[in-house]
Every structure is written in structure tokens, then in C-alpha cells.
Amino acid sequence: MAVIPVAIAGAPYDVVIEEGALARAGALCRPFLRKDTVAVVTDENVAGAWRETVAASFAAQGIASHWLVLPAGEATKSWENLARVVDWLLHLEVERKDNIVALGGGVIGDLTGFAASMVKRGCGFIQMPTTLLAQVDSSVGGKTAINTPVGKNLVGAFHQPSLVLADPLSLDTLPLRDVRAGYAEVVKYGLIDDPEFFFWCEANAQCLLAGEADAREHAIARSVAAKARIVAADEKETTGVRALLNLGHTFGHALEAQCGFSDRLLHGEGVALGMILAARYSARLGLMHGQDAERVAAHIAAVGLPASLKALDIDCDGQTLKNHMLHDKKMDAGTLPFLLMRGLGQTFLAKDVDLADVAAFLDEELAR
Ligand SMILES: NC(=O)c1ccc[n+]([C@@H]2O[C@H](COP(=O)([O-])OP(=O)(O)OC[C@H]3O[C@@H](n4cnc5c(N)ncnc54)[C@H](O)[C@@H]3O)[C@@H](O)[C@H]2O)c1
Ligand SMILES: O=C(O)C(=O)C[C@@H](O)[C@H](O)[C@H](O)COP(=O)(O)O
Ligand SMILES: [Zn+2]
Image (cartoon, rainbow, N blue to C red):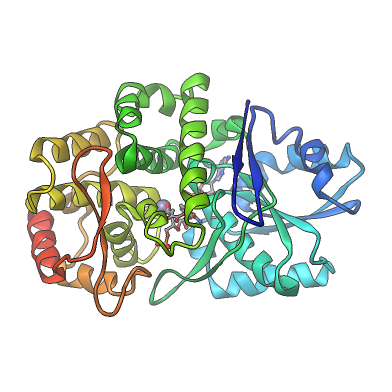
């Protein structure tokens, strides 16, 4: 068990990482609930695996849970579902000081958090992340959003949760493809500024993916500690520190958009490919040794994540991908800062990247 504080000024909270936390959700949430009812938003897969456990734990505390079960998948992060969640919460007469619950992966967390940011101009919410990706990344830091046809996460808000309850046992029911996708965001923390952790990942990835308890908890706790440190230093991504968490995402989001935000390419898979591309592009610019860039690619391929743009078989050129990137939220007066690497664990925000050169590099990668 680990409790990691997230020291956001004015809105601090804890991330509790505990095997069995979902079975004890009622007791762990009790101090955060002022009534004998709670609203829980989830998706159909999570409801199938965990609704009974969570509902029983609330019932044991005398709390009746009301459930909104949404379709699973990235397409759920939409205007339509945002309106659906907001209307449902208003119908339940949720008050500003109530904490609603997001039980699920990053999709449910991002959507429910965004709804919470607008109900009564902002009600409380508790994150109960049930995917590896959500436990190591999306449940922490308060970024919430939906997608629009123009691009990924383009409408959203910063809205911090009151509590995060991460139960590693919930990953026992998660499909391996989704475990791998979440693992990409774990590797990201090593590549940002913690080379020792990247080496640990290289040595322990297979145990982690196989669900070995010590490896899993270590990876979750170290990732959450890194994310907590970064978001506490730059809550709203204004100084450039938090932008480091976007490593691999400018490429990744463009690939997700090209795949229509469908299960052809999961978010973590796009990030995995994006980190390879960021490493190789850094090497092309002479910033990083080519052998280190290939070490990143080799590790991502070794864990079974997509590692080749050509194999993705997307029918487009570098220019098309570059055009998706123009919607990136890091765009600044017509230029796009990029997360590049000076070495393993030495990511930095480069402000002078030539997007025409990026498009040419992507053409080479698409043919490689
Ligand atoms: N807010 C942030 O800081 C942040 C960070 C990273 C990613 N994200 C967002 O998170 C989303 C991706 O999150 P994700 O990978 O968790 O995807 P997801 O929420 O779609 O979950 C993946 C799949 O696993 C299923 N699932 C979830 N928990 C399960 C469980 N315990 N057992 C069985 N099935 C389970 C879901 O139904 C879904 O089919 C993307 O939209 C991405 O943009 C946000
Ligand atoms: O928390 C952050 O900050 C991140 O960048 C974490 C990312 O893993 C996450 O995918 C985030 O949603 C991407 O941010 P965006 O601002 O590009 O949407
Ligand atoms: Zn991400």
C-alpha cells in the first residue's frame, strides 16, 4: 500500500494505491461523502467486472449508489456523452460539495471529471482508476477533456479530484492489450527525467505485464510520484514543466486522429509510437545518440506495443500527420514546441522545430 500526496496549491489530495481498494471503496470514500447516496459513472466493461464489488462496499457503509453505465471506448469522450453525464447529475440533484465517482479508465475519468468541472460551476469528484493507464497517469493531475471531430482533448478543463483510489487488483480483469497501452505511459516517466526507472522498466516489464504484484505496485507508485511532482510544480501547464508529460503525444495524438479515435490505435499505443518517433527525430537532429533512440524502439517492440509506423498501415503522408499536429494545444503563435530528448531520461521542450522537416521525417518513417 502507498499513499502519495499531490500538493496542488489550494486543492491537495491523496492517491491511495492499495490492493483491495475497490472492495473497501465505501469505507475509503466515507470521509468524502456527506450524504447516504453517491453517483457513479462507469462503462459497460468496468460495470461487468467491478460494479457489484463497489456497490456492495458503498452499501456496507449505508450509502446507496446510483449508476450511469456508458459505452466503452474512446468515442465515449464526446459532446453527446458529456451532456448525458451532466444532465444525469443534475437530475440526481448533485450539489457542489458532493463528490461524484468516476470508476473506469482514462475515458471515464476524463469525461466524468469534465462533467464535474461544470455541474453547478464545479462539483467534487473521486477518481477510481481501473486501467494501468488511468492508475499511473490520467487519474492524477486534473486534466479532463472530450474529443471533437477537429482533434483530441480539444475541449476540457483543469479540475482536480478530491481523492484517487487505485486498486492494482482491478488490473486482473483488464485485457492485455490495454495493460500494454498503459505501460507506454509508465515508460514515459523513465524517458522524461528518470533514466534509472527506464532501466528498471527494461528489466521488469515482463513481470509487470504478467501481473506480478511487486512489479505492478512499484511501477504504479513510482509513476504516480513522478506525475504528482510535475503537476504540483505546474498545475495548468504554463511554465513548460508539465508539458514534459506530453512526450510522444504530439505524434501520438496525430496518429490517433488519423485512425479516427478508434480501437485501431489506443491512446497508449499512439504514445508508444510517438515516443519512438520523438527519440528518432531527436537523433536525426543530432541531439541524442541513434543507439539510444533504437534502445527506446527495441523496448517498446519487446513488450508487444506497436513500434512501426509502416506496420500501422495508415493511408496518409507526413504532411497529413503534420496537419493534425496543428491542432495541438501547445501551438504558440504559429509554432509548435516539441518534446525531444538529449538522451535517455533527458526530455526537454524544443521551441524551434521546423514542421516541414518533421513532415519529411514522417514520410521516411511511413516508408521504413
Ligand atoms: N487526463 C489525463 O491526464 C490523461 C492522461 C493519459 C490519458 N488520458 C486519456 O485516457 C484515455 C485512455 O484511457 P484508458 O487507456 O484507460 O482507456 P479506456 O478508459 O478506454 O479503458 C480501456 C478499456 O479497458 C476497459 N476497462 C477498464 N478497466 C477495466 C477493468 N478493470 N477490467 C476490464 N476492462 C476494463 C474499458 O472498458 C475499455 O474498453 C484516452 O482518452 C486518453 O486521452 C488522459
Ligand atoms: O497530464 C498531463 O499533462 C499529460 O500530458 C498526460 C498525458 O498522458 C495525457 O494524455 C494528456 O491528456 C495529454 O494532454 P493534452 O493536453 O495534450 O491533451
Ligand atoms: Zn497520455
